[in-house]
Amino acid sequence: MGDRSEIIEFALAWMAAIVANDAAAIGNFMTDEWIIVGSDGATAKAEFLAMVQSGDLTHDMMRTVDGARVEFYGATAVYTARVINSGHFRGQSFSADEWVSDVMVRSDAGWKCVLSHVTPASG
Image 1 (cartoon, one colour):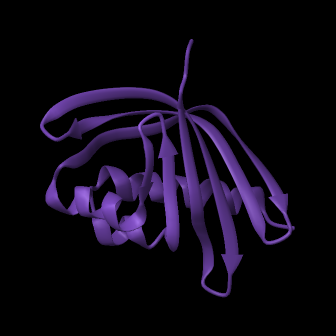
Image 2: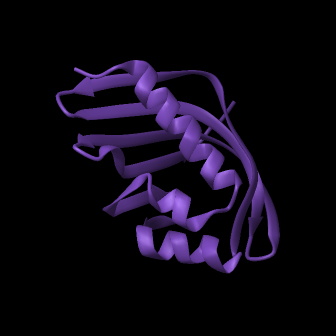
């Protein structure tokens, strides 16, 4: 069993790294196999971090809306929250309101995310 506050702190620190647009720091929160799934398909860790490193993807704001749900399954945690964020993607500004689900695993090195899924919020 895990501690809910550990996962919340992990998520907040990861969001801070994303807003800092620091590819190395962002990568520290992910396993090598990490993938993000969204409405435009799946993106692997290396591709995601390359977009951040190149400046093709930047964030200037990211925060949770309302409370987050955390459930534990042994050494696995599932974090679900509504997240608003904004930034730029390939020169175009964006603003997003999304439901985010992250699957995290605990190892000797601490928590790492293995899968992220984003779904646009509708209201």
